[in-house]
Image 1 (cartoon, rainbow, N blue to C red):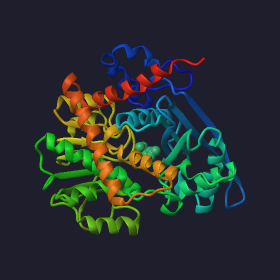
Image 2: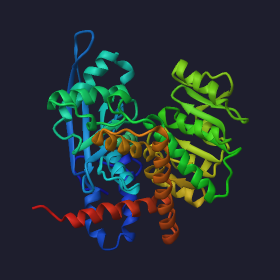
Image 3: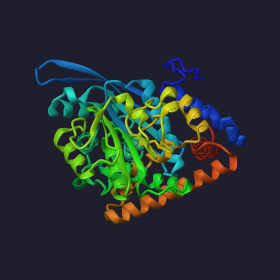
Image 4: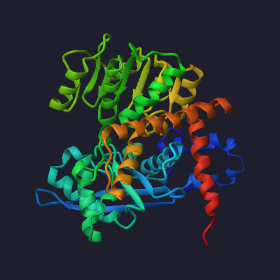
Length: 423
Ligand code: GLU
């Protein structure tokens, strides 16, 4: 376990989960293992106080973070999350998974992540804007188009990225579109970015199905989390003949063995902000979600959802990790023993940051691509990365997660070694 004085990870906590994942990869790193301690420590962690004036006139303080886990391969890259459970340990783990993800897909970025410990649903739009702007100013010391580039994550979106871009730009005195990705299109955003993470989940799912000789036509899919990632992935699976049999979100869990009508479900989501009261399905208890029979199980909510006890129950063939860190280590081992293929987060949900990379490149060159070009390039990068990881998994007889870590850690530590120690 980590000997850092400022966090106390446990076996199933995000940073504890990440540290165990690093340990499992060490035997495959050869001479690069001597640099492994680099992976066990974030390069830099900034904690900021964010005071804002509420609409009532009172002042409230919030805790904000930006952690740059590793910058060996390029500027930091990773989202910003607004959630009441955000804390330093969680942001550290999420930043480390960004290091691994960016290297696994071979994007020229290091790993970073940020967050604010806040329930954004309790704030008005104006309060949310003030919070976002003050946070951006506070972390402005360490972000920038060639330093560290934030993006959307849980509860953040294009509007929040627009405020971040504007605040940073006002502070530096020029319009810096490349400081964040996931922006609105008129501000240098990229076509295809909003649905990119879900599209990536679908692309690797399609590839995994090929390996398992499973047809997408008629495949049963259960999705936990129906936000940006889960809903976009579900739509694409449904478009290929898949049946979305169960969906869970913060408003409840619904089930229909014949498959949910996706057009009606999306309309319900837009109208009501959740799917719990959807008429075209049975409502089931949240815990029963894990007993639903499926071919693909897509955890696309928060970390640590698929724990040991649930891993023993799930009846599926392929787990596609749309969320970051949804599977605990114990669950990972149980799923492997049960012959359930787990396509890990660091590849399964890498579509978002891949199109973020496209956005950053387009902003730098001020030359914008069509949506078809973006989706084709995304498909190509995801398929190549997935096949490389499959090859490594077969070569070493290890699960896909270990293989993804072998590919990624090798790239990160090679860069580390070539750069050498300063001074
Ligand atoms: N938040 C997303 C992730 O976890 C995207 C990050 C990005 O685009 O930089 O991968």
